Image (cartoon, rainbow, N blue to C red; front, side, top):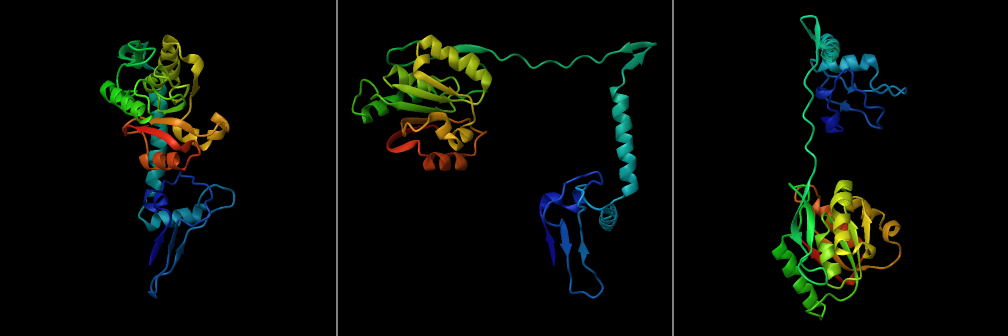
Length: 272
């Protein structure tokens, strides 16, 4: 019988230079009822230097690891790195490698607009590319029409507080403010999006004073919700428009469902 804990510490992947500290469990414990085999135990030094050197050597040789070769390649790698760091010379003159191309600056354009309410037809900034996922205009318009009808006032939203998660450009929260919402909390983790897209959009529409911006990950926002919003009770509306590939939806929905920010009468607008 063999017990391996955990897989990431497999001795087959262990380098002689690796230092995993002193975890509270052995890497490998082997036992057998066969009289010809003996148990192998891996121990740790108390100094925090990983495996004891003799035990490490026995373990690695047990699995066919060439320790001398490892020492050679380790030294060769260091020499190669030093050679790479030294400037090249050609004809007695120092030759510099061409600099790497810098990442292109992030830019914005105005393709979105407010669809209804007091800021109707005001153009909104959005980043070029796929960094931010704005809700499609048709979907956004239909969603707000449904919310207004559900609130008993087809012409406008009933007054209340809105929590806009993964707000990005802020187009959803701004639409809510334009249609009668009292206050919106925007949660967006990207500082550039906040400073160059979201805040300018709020200034352009005149809703900055009715807005609260939280530059933090949504998961952290829920973990410290009381710190961010105080004891002001649940929100009347919550919109959730996360990026497609960067979110654990199971964790997200559990955090939302267990949060005190949601009440019995909270409307949740979710585009997943």
